[in-house]
Image (cartoon, rainbow, N blue to C red):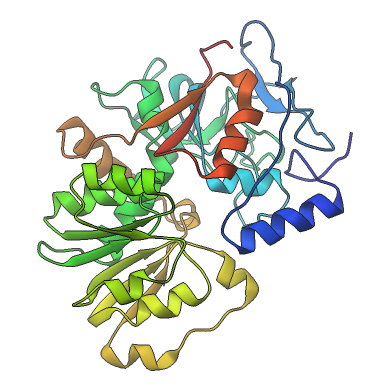
Length: 376
């Protein structure tokens, strides 16, 4: 086994080079074969993916259980959703973030099984959904390597009660997608009714969450997607102006400009998007590739008073009060029916490799969730 800190896999150099090339074309692929295995019953212990030389040999192993420390809760996960970040970590391509463990499975839902000292808002048995920075030791250290952890310790501010009208699978699909969309559109852009919002790759988790939030505000929505089937889905959702995310043609096809862009594209698409902005427009950047490559922006675009903001959820882990406030607002919105969960594709834990493969192929709509209660 190869020890790669905080990662479960490392591909041979030629395969990593191919993957990086695919990523630069915004069409990553990864090959996984076979299934992973886990104990017949989930024990009262942490479960992590074994270190492996490649994604063909995934497996679960028990890890020592630690009690929650002061300000922490221990959660028995029932469902864990997969984000693109997880695929990047699996491929050893995700840049480390200070204060955030490079582990997969940051979004999950489950039941509180224990509370550390000083925790008053939760009790054992409470249903919670969580945005995690990684499993946390009793002394507060983040534990690298605890991927898809079944019984993690997290800070209490990273959790919120699950509304009674949501099940564990639905709740697990919410944190990253809706926190990203809500923070971008509500907290940063302050979207208003009647404003024009362009949402790129809008059939993903973040994109569909953004549609829910923008529609609730009465905004006019335009969207892109990478296949005709996905574009048809958006039209069925009532989006009238739908374009191809794998082409720059959207920049010529949209007339009248836009007030807000939620951007997941890279390269020339960024400059073309800036060219669509109305005066004092807000450009919300989610894609990380251009930052990693050191790309620059055409500063002349900002003469109209535009703002450009990178959306990075690591902010919440350094600002607990902001996370608590926004997480509660999201939970309240789901409880009252303002927002709906995205479509969800589920996999049993034995099929994590297949779930990662589906993520890499961009064939799904909405979120991918690992149902820890299911069996293949």
